[in-house]
Length: 316
View 1 (cartoon, helix red, strand yellow):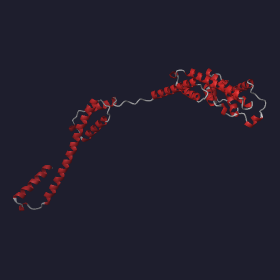
View 2: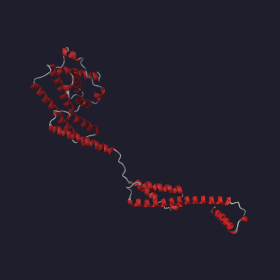
View 3: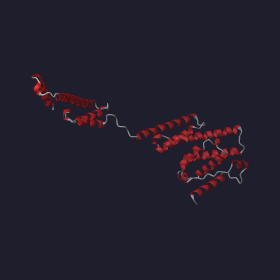
View 4: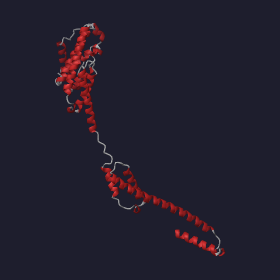
């Protein structure tokens, strides 16, 4: 006999023992449609406690369920009760929920509306079941710091389901709410602890880079232009970290200032040399454009031509 056949057989026996078996469907049942037979899946059989808790969460508002849905829930609940590995608290809650579903079906078959006194008794019984579930929830949860991650998620979900019940008493509602809030806070704390921490500003890596730069004791005048620009850019990158050690920051800034002044001086010198070369070219063109023979020049004109030629030759 397969596990599914064994479960269905046990469910049939439980149905007959509970007095819920009928030889033929009534007219109201025929109008409601075919009876839905709930069969447990292999996943529900392998993880009975998880399946039972899901069943409890789904079948809370029984007054809103149709008779067909109630019959299917009753069959599923009884099938779940046949499983062996149910926790004691889960089995207790499951038995109460199955009993409540059975009573709801009986009330509907008895003629729909009950007298006010019976209705009040049913409401009181339902409220008592919810309060018992809340007390059992508080006992099973205990200290949320001792729960593993999966149990913590289940505690949050079950607590929020209980808080949605209107029949939950005030002191129990407050305790359940506090437990849910503590579980949420504990989950957030664990998630933050698992996230990689950001390194603080001005960390050892930046200080190491600053000391490495300061170990380069070559004067700025001894560096070529590319080397000077690279050292100046590295110094500026380090100085962008305002959390760097104050002494190291001052030393790096002093080095950057010297490198900057040297680079600016070279640029200015190149600009000046460029201007001088332009002037020399203009003087050379002017000198070459003077095609007068030397015999026609007086002494002053000849001396000026000789001086201009010597200056141009000296400037290269």
